[in-house]
Image (cartoon, rainbow, N blue to C red; front, side, top):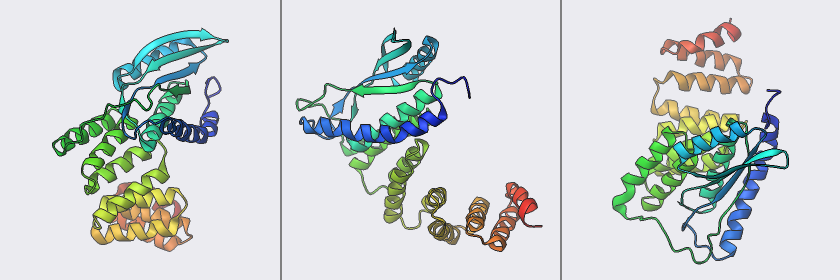
Length: 280
């Protein structure tokens, strides 16, 4: 939209910078002696062109993310929000996902994430309780965070669940889905791979990984995952529909039409539009 302060194009251009910044911040933390997965809190800054945008963002971050508003002030012709995060366990992946999620939430409120920092260092001694009995607690925290669209916290809590019980394929799969929500497709792929290695008949993981590969333009690889998903469950219309789309990308129009017809026969009425458009 023309009247936005922080445009979609600007957000896309800044996204790689946020990925690099998160890695740099974590490297500085560990370089100062910060122990991996210790708890830390961060001062976080957003900027916008109007005070009311930051007020709405601050209210959202307080209600959903448990953040504390420190100030909203005008500086150099623009407005700045300073807010404080709750403590969370920090490693490179957690920090990246936390920061990218905040950048996305800022964009959704037409505000720009302008930086973050922490005083946590070598003297950080606070850690989460990772006793086996806490596994269900962290998994449920992750699910609740996901339901609230707090995808950074979802990733963090799924990661803690994985640290407690790394053999649980569902934790890896669920964390992958949260990473997809914050546009970290390559990171999600790694988690889908791990889920499948732990549970070779995890059909939902094959389906999601196939979509991930298709979106990355890896159509042949996506086709293999769709084939495996169909081998595991031959009655899912969405898998046939998606495989048809992938076959179309590969130039196999006859194969695509066959899959869309199968999807429709299995009750996937959404395939009718494809059949009408491409399979007359």
